[in-house]
Image (cartoon, rainbow, N blue to C red; front, side, top):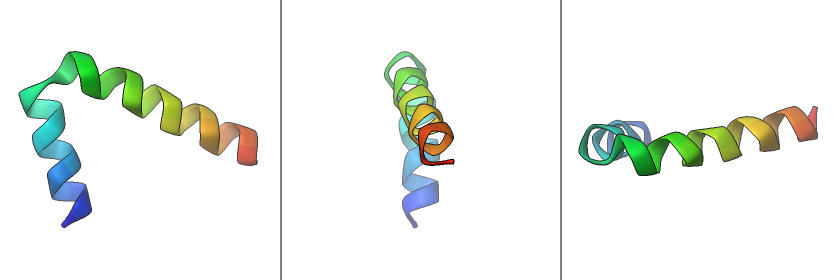
Length: 32
């Protein structure tokens, strides 16, 4: 469900979703 919601957010506001994905990606890289 969360994944579908995230996809919907990307479709609705890709400009806002992009930075969010970048933050998540950075967090994952830092965790590694």
